[in-house]
Length: 352
Image (cartoon, rainbow, N blue to C red; front, side, top):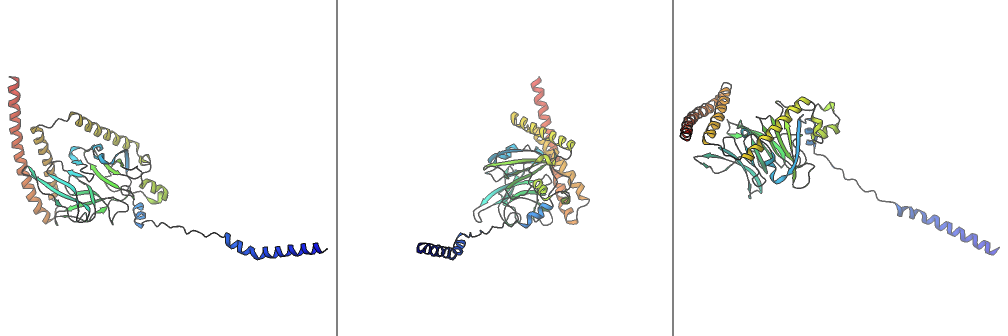
């Protein structure tokens, strides 16, 4: 009996101790909840997403970042682009105006400079003011001599480099405030280059989104004559994001005939580029003169057509430019006749 009492008392003591310690055990096994980091998206992304341009992308190709320019089959009428130390250089069709990118050690940024070919030499490059307070690279000037596209990173970009457009104002003699051209061209990745080939009605744009290091993707698209955006109410947010990010270019082929025609123009442009590279035969003096005269005649026609609706200040500037261009065209036509006569005489001598 004594042993039984001792056993019962012992069990009661164990139970009491267990009850006293159990709350401490519960406290010890409690896990601290980790705070989840909330990533706040740049509000400008939502704004851009809502106004994503509806663009038909014809094709794409992944190439080395260091020499992507050689894979873009621009027509000669669109100008000439070069990689130039991975910063870009543009020369117009007449090869008398150039936009180059140079690094400035003072602010550790790249800026766009312009120079002109006068008296058989290039003038000293002068920085294009007002468009590149932060790093700007890969300029492309449209044949109108007014519309300038380039890539820039800084406060106005939503990622690394975004694509911007500005226009030259003849009244002030400077470029207007640049605008981000938005999605699907600008993104949170690096978007480097944008160009329009009006002759072939094709556009090219270069980005490193979703690409391994040291590679970029060249997208070829058909430019719209006027800005056209997706109607956001017709798409889910996920669908809009995929269109803005160009996840599947086939999603943009809404018109099969339009796509086939654009693809045929692209194939023809590539073929011309390959043939030019294979031949590598420089133009004769006569061909160069004829080409310059043709370009100048087009420019004169545009200037004369614009003169009728130009402002008073613009007319004063245009009048001087038109007169100078007419004199230049007259000189070119005299040189063409001289070169034609020389060519005819040379052929006559060879045949006799």
